[in-house]
Length: 197
Image (cartoon, rainbow, N blue to C red; front, side, top):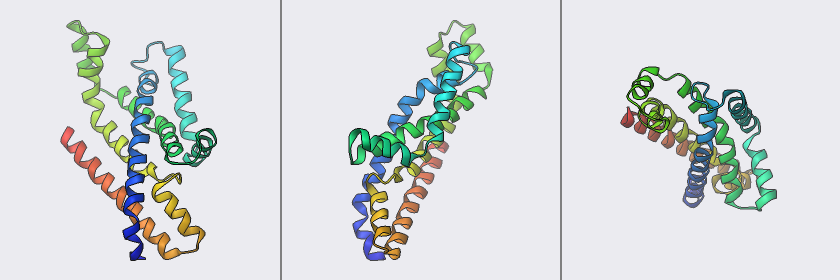
């Protein structure tokens, strides 16, 4: 139903904003989880490492829709539950990928900065971050493109309305719009990674 495309601009923008805000919040939440969850840099391995891994597992094991239902009950309807659901679910994926990337870094730059008296922050900024940045950026951008589809607003809401009215031509139109956003996200992710590398 190509006539529906003109009505999808605003929901598509809302989906994009929900995805970006949710993923940004998730990135901020995953910084301590990735730090604690990487076995080679965790501050107190017997406690912080299993705690961070448990948090990542819980976040990944519960689906976005379940998180969205929980946040709808907590804060009400609208885009906010979708943002929170994406943020909580993103913590598990982004922190896990980041922690695994940190564990696979080349130890040479870390040892070089420590040998000239660099502190932990300098090691993180100059030795660890440049090695993991392309991989982590790719994961973050992909998550933001794919996870903006929780039915708490945007294209997800339009999709559910089309399904409820049995307008399958409209359903296909919304699916094409979602696919377009995901493809654009993948292209942007590829461009950013090439720029960083």
